[in-house]
Image (cartoon, rainbow, N blue to C red):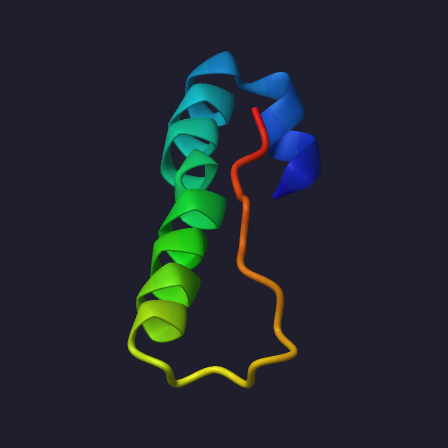
Length: 51
């Protein structure tokens, strides 16, 4: 898939758009669990995305 993506601009843009939000979505999940107290106290609060 990676080789095809690099050759096809339309596919590359589509995958970048789809996968681009994954880290931010996971960060929201982590923050929600931290806020609800469902994570151990030694797990640092997330600062993702670091911009």
